[in-house]
Image (cartoon, rainbow, N blue to C red; front, side, top):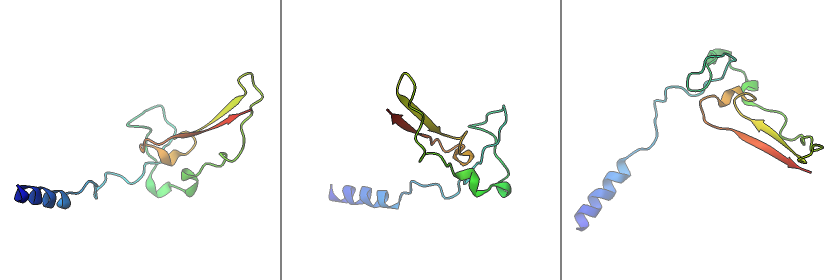
Amino acid sequence: MPIVFFTFALLLSLSSASDPTQLQDFCVAIDTPVFVNGKLCKNPAEATPDDFVFHGLNIPGNTSNKEGSAVTPVNVNQIPGLNTLGVSLARLDFA
């Protein structure tokens, strides 16, 4: 029994859960009506730092509505560099 446990532990220590040869590191979105696992990709040589930045989460939303709240979404439409990463977030403001 100890040999089986040791062998199993040794095999687990040799396994890897990462993909060192990813298909792409990033896929900056471009506006197009065609969707392929997200939006189509911009040429990586044309990517700029602004494709990965959103200025606006520090600005409070307008809460002077009947719900008394505001939502500031941040997804691939605001940060094109999030394309195909499955990441989005939102700022919620309550009066």
